[in-house]
Each structure stands twice: as C-alpha cells, then as structure tokens.
Length: 237
Image (cartoon, rainbow, N blue to C red; front, side, top):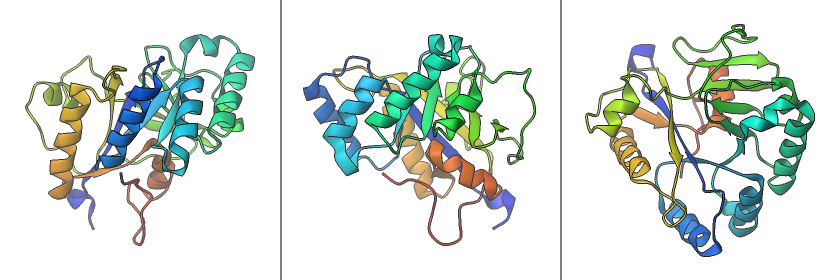
C-alpha cells in the first residue's frame, strides 16, 4: 500500500487520578474492557500496583506518570521506575506532562522503559539515532528509548478541532498522540476522552485511522510507519 493511501496513526492517552477508590477502579476496569478503542492510562506507582492486582492478565495498557520533580536527580528517577516495574513487570511506557523536557533518558532505557510520551521535547537535543517517518514528532535520543511528543494543545490543529466538534481527516501516514488529561475519579472516562474515542471509532471503520499504543511505536518506526503484513503490533481493545 502506498504512503498516500496509509491511514493516520492515532494514540490516545489519559491520566488516572492519584486517589482512585476501589469502587471507582472496578467500574473503570469494566468500562475499559467493553471499549473498542485502546487508550493508554498513565498512573502513579501506587495506582499501577492496584490496577495490576485488580486487572491481572486483563489489565489495560498502562504507563508510569512521571513527576517532573523526579527529573532533578537520576537516583530519584531510577528508584521510581524500579518501583513501577516491580508493581507492573511488563511496563514499558511512561508519560511526562508539562513544559519540562525529559532528562536522564538513559536511566529510563536502562530500567526497561522503551517509550516516553512528553508534552515537550528538548530542542537542544535534536539528534535521533534512528530515523522516524516523515512528520512523526518522535526521536530515538538514546538506544532503547523513543521520546514521542504529544499533540500541542496550545495551537490550532487536530486537538482543537476535536474539542470544538469540527472533525478533520488526518493527513495520510501522519502520527497524532492525544493527551486527554486527568480523568475524574468518580467517572474515570472524561467527556473529552469520550468524544475522541467516538471520533476515532468512526474513522477506524472507514479506514482513515488506525489505533496504536505507545509501546507499539518503536516497531512501527522500524517499519517506516507500516504495521507488519501478517499480525499486528497495534493493540486492540
């Protein structure tokens, strides 16, 4: 299939509340299990442990929510990643919200994190050890780790159009990583996320969009943005 016919790749991320009561967590797990659009959920170490215990093998795709203060010291960042991966051994994704770029990228790679979704990339580190598909805002700053920039919400673009009800057709072959923000504990799927999921589902049916989770992006990049011919690295809900 030629590049002009490629669907856009869409990644949806959301933040779970720091305080997540057991009843709300059970309702959220049930709702996620019924969903048809994959979402990657960022959470604190404590919430990751609770979700791992409650969800078992059926736990949804999770990511560690990095606190910007952890970036002040390599030892702090390493300790929190180790704790997160002890709580959820298969964890490979982290999310960093806010304007602060990622620091100590090598620490994440050494501790098993393969992808970090960030709101900002450090412009001082422009190099990428492996090329990404044209137009994809991601880079391989250290071996074993990809940094992926979420769609900026401060300027006109896909996010603003989605929020205001004007649903564009994403450019073929493009990558869009959308951050829905923190969802409320009483109903951990926000109205914004609901709209994005409904929008994505309609375009999946029409072949305009394919969904991916962040941990699938390294394999997609290795294939120039293409999924494998047989099987798929993309996660289905």
